[in-house]
Image 1 (cartoon, rainbow, N blue to C red):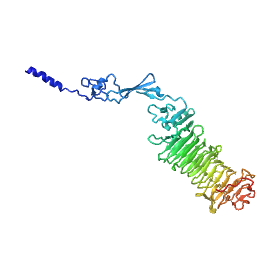
Image 2 (image 1 turned 180 degrees about the horizontal axis):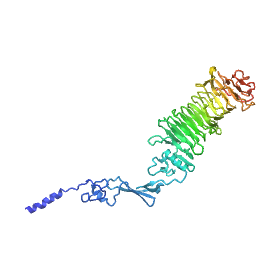
Image 3 (image 1 turned 180 degrees about the vertical axis):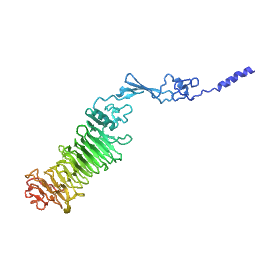
Image 4 (image 1 turned 90 degrees about the vertical axis):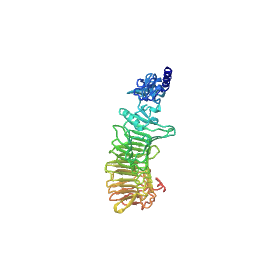
Length: 508
């Protein structure tokens, strides 16, 4: 009987044997640490499945280039035990396979040109595949961050001219700065680099600054075209231009909205000056345009608007020329204080040609104590409706108010004041506070004659101090012009009748 029982006991023991998986192991693919029929998986546990895929198992993260640089093979770790080999066609994406260290990936081809693309579809982290190079196509090779594109262009621009071209999709603006991918300010547009925004029909290019610390948004030694700068809470400078190793900083069709927080809008410094055309600046607590360039540095401003700020334009140095661009005038409008303020201890040369200075709360044009070596040309300008809330009081004990133009200079600079229309300003229209001799004499009746109108409670031309003003051949708001000037104003008998001659401005 005993012999019959032994086989039954053996069978019972055999039925209790259970395959056990999940034992820890340390060497993926090996069998030595696992029960029979199992192998160590990528998850460092033993399993029969790991043994079954021993021939095809791959190590997650491993990669290699295939067919030269056409394809990349990498191991996907989603299958925790065996891994999965994935082959990606780089060539079909406009990319190429390259190996960096131990990692292979589809990367952007090298950029052999001088143009660097940024914007829609671009890669925001330039330190990761596909490692954008600034090629416009494929889109992933564009820089997602404007700062990265500018840095790449600056490296090229050290030996030649370079362009950063922003790409946007039709009707949709491309915005640099906000959200989870912020830009680092200031964005540097180096000498030799042009930042060119997207143009119609693509959406506009916007640089938006949301940080609250004092800073500069754009620092420009090169050129910026077709870009809108929007400030939310920065309290420094919007666009600061300065000299690089060579060239002339330039702004073309640039809009700056200061968010009523920036202290200065556009600033110009250095010995090279700047070229500004088609620029619109608003919402600045101080001057929308601030020029403090070296003596003689040319600052050309054409067809631009400086408005709805503390001061429209403040000039402290350089040779600034404000004029139209074709038929588009330069305008200084609706600022809380002065429209144009010319002051400082450095020689400043100013040409205002056909500039419109209107509806500023303070004095329209205020020249204050600049060196006598300076020059002022005021030609063909319209200066009207200024000084309603903050016109400058001048004249010491005389306590007069000048809403239009106030020239407060002991020694007059070289000057030419001809062909202007000055009217409807609060207080005096054109005032001189000086001991020197000034002239607004056109020499004959015609287009060079200054015309005054809508004088109100002030006078057309006022002079306080020991000097004089030659006002011959002027269009006065009455014939004869009795009572329309104050102080030492001479040659008023040589007035220009109306008609003939330029008509006085119509009252608003």
